[in-house]
Image (cartoon, rainbow, N blue to C red):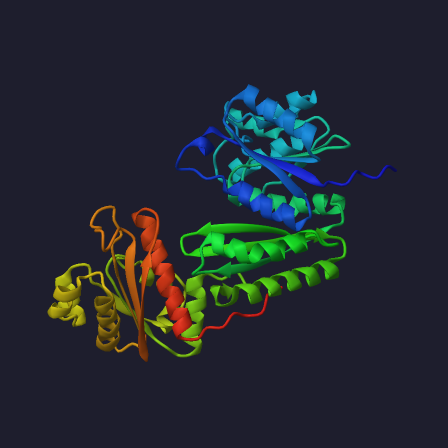
Length: 428
């Protein structure tokens, strides 16, 4: 018996005009990309194609010509704009025929609901010649797997609650049996307080050396406001050797980047700070002006945050700074609301009035207006009162939302440093 060729490369085709709309995101491809990586299958491309027969056929044909595995999601419903079955059959030059067993299963689902099956749902029982249909316990659209000998085409339904269980139960075993034997492993190093270029300058000599090793490691640098992540990944048949190389690479990066690293276990900055506050039995309160409660929102998004969050004050107006936090009117008059003195007074005031162990004060110019030569848009003063009070001035780039996100991240990082949080060892 001939051995089926190994599956090494893949493309995903998400089908449906609704996915081209501004308010819809193709989350299926994100799920599939991660699962394929775990199987050691390299994802080469992702596509989103509307409900247009010619474009869909062309996309499928091009993908089949390039890679070992093509996965489609969506377009398996009963309506005229559900075109995936017909498009794949046309590209492969195969017939479509109603499978009596599939038809009985689809009809039974409607019978259990006490309604007759509409005639249009017969389309969902059409199976491509030579294909194996995949059961769908969560919907009426079965999947299909077509093996052409050197290519595998998998048709999956669009709704994630149907697609994900089907892929895990019916497709992963097939792919695992035909994967190349390589396994993928990953590490993540998350930093804050450094810009992307600063992280790159320090990290590039290290990760480029590991990229050229006997067991090569790929590194991707991802940046968002207040956060720069290093994603390390590799694929090898010798998993122990791969794990060892990833451990050494991440350890060198942590050592080189120092205190900028806040985690190697994929937790968010607020999760790290929250866990450290809880471990030290410390309660935090915040007085926020330009961030409008964003810092406390991020902290309280974490389940169980009542163990370390007391509350806070959104002190947008100067009157609130005076009345709710005890900021002196003379301090505001002498230094202005966006100043070190006011940030310190806000942090100390909210700590004192709420009885917190840690107080945070944030005041700044988020824009787009309100800046000056002395205090341009993006100027933010942050203070943390935890025993001593420390304050720092920042000048953040970007629009209003970016500046607010940068400020909340910087405040979290200052709290992290003030309470002495340590970076854990790289996690497997």
